[in-house]
Length: 249
Image (cartoon, rainbow, N blue to C red):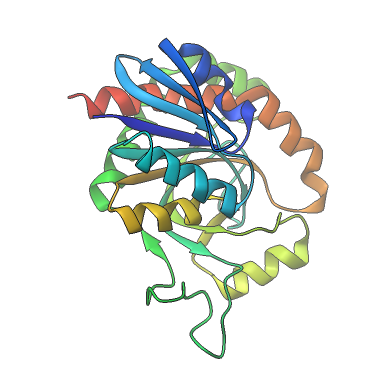
């Protein structure tokens, strides 16, 4: 099996890339792909850049050019549900493109010519990633101490819906509108649903795991930047480590 790993920002992937052994660096489609072994698993790791189009083209390259068998999208997201806190981990159940609106030709959020308003992650893929996150929360004691020192004392796992769109949700009014239109959504980001659409087209399994870096309002800009710089990479690497162990069983 060859695993594709995508993140939208370098900070989410730097530790993963540094951990890849027998590294081969390949430039394709204005992206840098890192091919090698991560914890003994054959992987291709790539920084996609922000947004749905960038993420979709990157995922397509992973599937067509690098022939990965499955993809994991990892990184941070803004919390939408009042139940999520900074440091919580969200595994995607369904992914919506919250900025898709072709009314009156079709339903709001419906992806043209698919009949779908969301893309659902296979239940078994959800379960494997959930088990990986549980193991991470249980076994990464030193990292948990560091988080606790910054008042992230009880990070929890949530399996739920994620909204993606080419809008950075950064104000109470934007957040309230998203909750009104998609009340099941737990968090928001800018790439996951686009990657899900590509994976659906090619019948490639996908897991999306997001760490809450902020609560998606205008007061959290500094929190967002600080969390990414300090913690995003460690979360991604640690969760991927447990995920790969489970996939190799």
